[in-house]
Amino acid sequence: MCGIVGYIGCKPAVPVLLEGLKKLEYRGYDSSGIAILEEGGIRITKSVGKLAVLQEKLAKRTFSSTIGIGHTRWATHGRPSDINAHPHMDCHGDFAVVHNGIIENYLELKEWLMAEGHCFRSETDTEVLAHLVEHFYKGDLEEAVRKTLAKVVGSYATVILSYKHPDMLVAARKDSPMIVGIGENEYYIASDIPAVLNHTRNTYILEDEEMVTVTAQSVKFCDFQGKRRDKIIFEVTWDPIAAEKGGYEHFMLKEIFEQPKALKDTLAGRLTADKVILQEVDLTPAEVAAFNKVAIVACGTAYHAGLIGRGLIEHWAKIPVEVDIASEFRYRSPLIDEKTLVIVISQSGETADTLAALRESKKKGARVVAITNVVGSSVAREAHDVIHTWAGPEIAVASTKAYTTQIEAIVLLALYLTQAKQTMSQEWITEIISELKMIPDKAEEVLKQAGRVQELAKYFEHVENAFFIGRGLDWAVAQEGSLKLKEISYIHAEAYAAGELKHGTLALITEGTPVIALATQRDLYDKTLSNVKEVKARDARVIGFTFEGNHGFDKSVDEVFYLPLTANELSPILTVIPLQLLAYYVSAARGNDVDKPRNLAKSVTVE
Ligand code: M6R
Image (cartoon, rainbow, N blue to C red; front, side):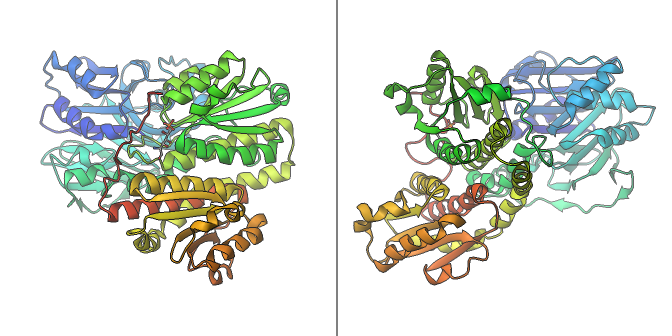
């Protein structure tokens, strides 16, 4: 996730662009840059680091240009660096481009453009856009952009500035947000409303596959075929703080709702109809066959994603898996060597315990694959191979979209290992890939039931204890659901393997004790149902989560919540969403600081 801005009008552009970028820094902050038009050409200033570094660079001069574009970056393709920071230009410096999103076929396009004689400077996917516009330009900028977009597969919000058209900006969007702010004899373009709120409350919201051309006096919208579109003005009534959270009350809620997009982005370019492609992992089938063990190491929520990984890798790729909490791992002298594949999982990529586990594993000769959300983080730099989750910055301390995308990354890795070992049939792989592709839309369906979860949450406002139970992968999700509730609502919650209750914990179940029972694993359903009956017989208040169509479960529980049907192994991605919502609504109703719970930090960089 990155932030982009554009300005054309009568004010000096640089302060307007910097102010807009400041408001979008929550979307990414590893580097930033701007491009303005000056006599003689496009002038680009960019820098790795926070926006303040760019501001300092620009403070040395005043600029009179009244047109420009800007970008604040959350690295995806290419580590954070001056060269990889946006804007990017074509070979001759006639076009400058800023972009938010992922160009999935950029390698193919880059190869083709290089064969045509284009010279690339950065490692980014974005730079292909500038060269494509240069390639297609025959005097009409809009036409060149249209032809460019026809070649591109992926998601984007992009703005193009051209030295050949000093009085216009052309922008387009597909699957990444973009708005146009309307001033007097001026227009603003931005990824999000907060960037323009100091100047105007009148905006246009671009739809998918829509292009816009602005001059200081005019605005024109078209579809990707060049057909004109009329749009209505959207007047923003939110205050600036609410606007930063996209109108949501808290970042956590916004991030929960961002999951369909994050899930879609994490799969982008990594699946064909019958195969997983992980360009970032460089293992030959012979190397995969040589692993006699997988060790997954992580902390907190990332550890819970690792528990799901154990189920999948053992079941599909038939390799024994151990899962460890990173702070325990290195002090138990783990038996790992060059025949071990170590998978470290970390949203931030900076968690001290996880990093120490990674280093320990390398020292013992293991191959280390990292799953992380932050390009250029310590974990990403030090692992042998890295699978990035494309969740975008996660700001709330309670991890939500990072967790579901971590599960997706593990699914992809488990399938990659399975393909290499040929432990499952091609027919089965094709089937699971087709289920996986449907997960983002199914997550959207689950979110439609948020109001129902908010109702359920009312019961928890005044309870002191809660239990989460489930079997198999449901038990792993139960652990994450219980952590979510604890960390933000401060209710004591515990997760138990449903079959284990009778060995002690059942003594704690009394009348009205809330029990969240997860029963999404069809092969374990009957067993879980017996355990649900055990707690129900002790008068617990049971809220059940099960798969759609499993009518009958409602007779055994007090409330039932149905989840869209999917493969057993993929259901954790959907099951956790109502549990995240439950924790959120309980915490908000209790008046807690949802995004910054007491005693906790987003990234734990100390042991
Ligand atoms: O950045 P990491 O994924 O390495 O962080 C690990 C844990 O600190 C983190 O998942 C923590 O448990 C979450 N804040 C819980 O929501």
